[in-house]
Length: 337
Ligand code: TRP
Image 1 (spheres, rainbow, N blue to C red):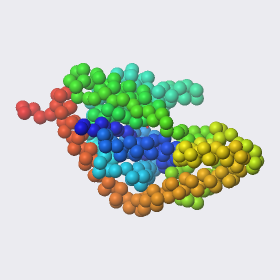
Image 2 (cartoon, helix red, strand yellow):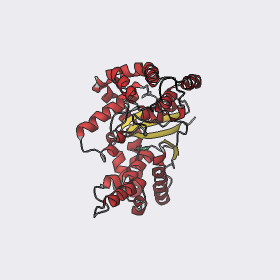
Image 3 (cartoon, rainbow, N blue to C red):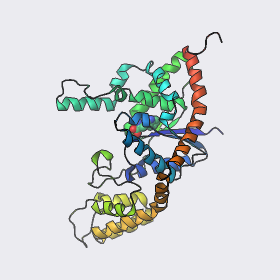
Image 4 (cartoon, rainbow, N blue to C red):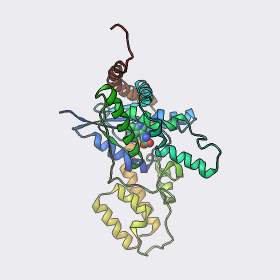
């Protein structure tokens, strides 16, 4: 049986938080255990360079993200877990794909257009102010990530759907010239995954500064949960679970029966302080084993490094020969052979 290839890139900016966990990491790790598929999960550090000019932050985030996936049990023998910058064939393929990508296609990318829009709103003279070629051609690098490994399924958030369309466009154009080198990938959108709200009730996101790190030490986890905003309803007053961030987070970690029980307690008027204590205990016991593992891993960067090297070696056993074929197809390579 040919296993279906699932591939996704993980940004190495910031510390993984509970929103990342329920929205992306948990479903991805679950999916990777299935026998009929094989996962290519990689740290997209070439992409992250677009956002940060701070080497120490990039390194720290790379370590934290890698440790998170390892601590949560990703099987790196069955799957491919690597760091993008360890695969030099990816930027090399990016250049080749650049030559088959219409500039107009990139002009239409949402992330680029958003940046231009922000400049317009700020009234800057140059609409491209502060926009690097990295940001502009971001989708081409992403296409190379995917096409290099002939991945058919790409689990991503909704904001990435356009990038997948672009990948298909670029692949089709290349295939048209040179034959069927590339598979056309499809996005996989996890419809059921919860979108968590953060401390202030807005979507949990690094850019809002309202996150709860997955592996915050126990004391800090308690402190952060206590900070989650609630309304001014008093103990004993019936409360609406639908508008309560505490409830929503609880639900993302709970079975249906457990959720129903908490709904009942909302109807009975559970005090916010009590609900915070319940939520802390509930998450804390689910996460504690992986958290211990995580902090242990962070003390052994050499072990994390060895895992990533193993992944890079496996990935390159695919990318090296495939890039060679591609280069030969476009007319590079040894003469007179
Ligand atoms: N752009 C993706 C994001 O922001 C990360 C990413 C980079 C990616 N390369 C990829 C996702 C390849 C899927 C496939 O989340």
